Image 1 (cartoon, rainbow, N blue to C red):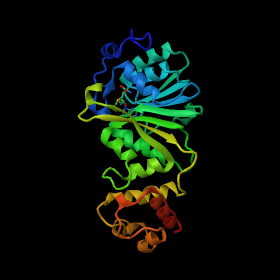
Image 2 (cartoon, rainbow, N blue to C red):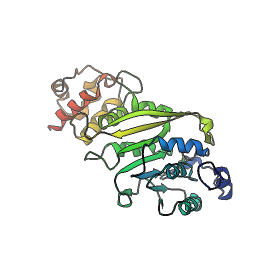
Image 3 (cartoon, helix red, strand yellow):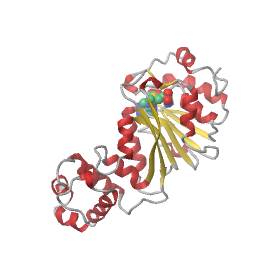
Image 4 (cartoon, rainbow, N blue to C red):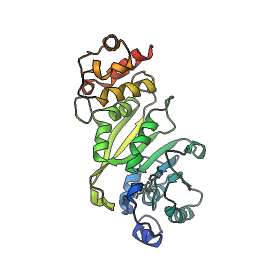
Length: 280
Ligand code: SAM
């Protein structure tokens, strides 16, 4: 029996259900239930919230979220081998866990969730950034979620919280910090996972702001920032040549120097430029 519930330890779960980790699915499992409970606590008070979890795997974080009092957990898992193990967790917490088998990139979870909603996940590395960008760039704000508590490779986590002028500053920093407060709340060495990945990991907690810090159209901002950082060593006037025929004028109207480079531009500057470009 484990420390946080009366279910078997995760090593036993993995052996019983023959859940040898698959690299193609980004499977690096957390088997220490004290650690998964600690990770779950980073999501904040979940007693009145539904929690969306992507990639529950054998259920370590899922069990942490339920033991820490989540009202309801909706877990989306692509690997059907994990479903019997997750069914045992669901049975242990009647009415509090729903598991959907499928690809999180294809499934719209909203019809299964009741607000307020938090998201918590030890994300599969191959889909983590894509999901984060989708959660940050819906056309309307506030989004469906109150907070995101997500495990990333440390290098990706550092890109999310990076400030202008640093090497890590780029599209992820701008999109994340435009509409949320983002901070790193936990660091985990490779040895915390089975099998250990090559790099360290970090947990990022993002809290949705009631409204974006500066006005801008999300699609335009996203496109401009992607272009600007795609050629980050170039001056803005050449990196953004394709964004508007009169890009030098637009940059100046936004208060930016055409000779600046993307990594020097603060969030406010990108939003001003997106507004100028959106004028058509
Ligand atoms: N949450 C578990 C833990 O912390 O031990 C497993 C985390 S493991 C890093 C990532 C999990 O995401 C795996 O269980 C994998 O099968 C699942 N996964 C990978 N791609 C997925 C996708 N596109 N949609 C849903 N789940 C996915």
